[in-house]
Image (cartoon, rainbow, N blue to C red; front, side, top):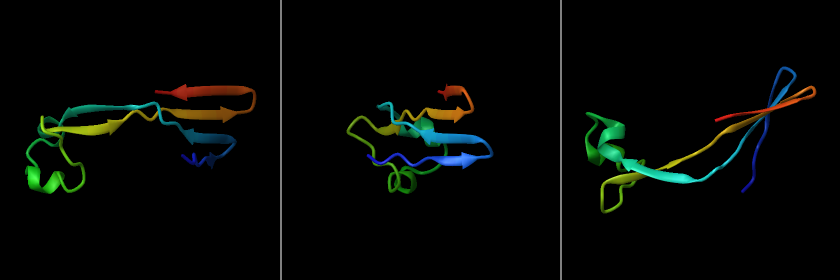
Length: 68
């Protein structure tokens, strides 16, 4: 996977991929009808959608931080 960094002032911002998990699609999209949200986020047999864990790596000067 290619990780693309962006620059914001003196900071370098890099999104990371830390894995995936599944949550109930109905709970995530609320009142939006399933036929609409399922086009964007297909559900499994238990109605769960896949969501990514994507912390942000920030580098600037002598500091390195992760926002999770």
